[in-house]
Image (tube, rainbow, N blue to C red):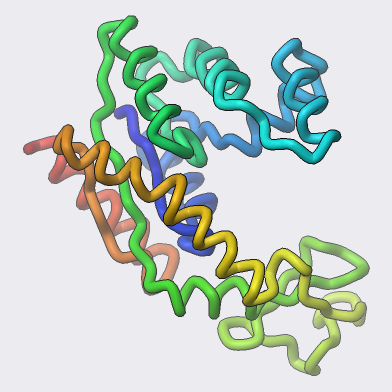
Length: 219
């Protein structure tokens, strides 16, 4: 299957992408991984992206599209892939359609993870990270530390990242609504969008997604 995964920040796209890709035996292709791999390997596209990022500028669509094209041409993506973070806007969606059409391929589904805005803010703004080890992550509501502000694992101080403040989260949501959400309408016009609720336990959301994808495949 060839799937695009969309949803607002805090919807759990990265977590669901990993589970779904594993269940479907297809590679999980995330924009973040593409950038990191190309930059660390010093590819031409990676060097271009790094130059823009170092200057504090947005990486142009053509660079992102080039990285995605290179990755989708790898042997492990021959029988399908799950795209996470790409396409990010309608221009990228049109470029993806053109890439697939050139190879006589099409997308099978666009999985839209739906989460109420207040829940997104609650999920992200409630995160607390250990200063000693950023892999130690807690949440004031869903997985609180035993002692407030103290890491259960190493006793380090827990803090809220600037990116996780409510003000920043709401700004990220504005960007999502303006730039990325329009691709949902773009793909709805093609009859590809499958919308599911991303509320509940991770395993419940994964099961919901798998059932929805299987149904869309049959349809």
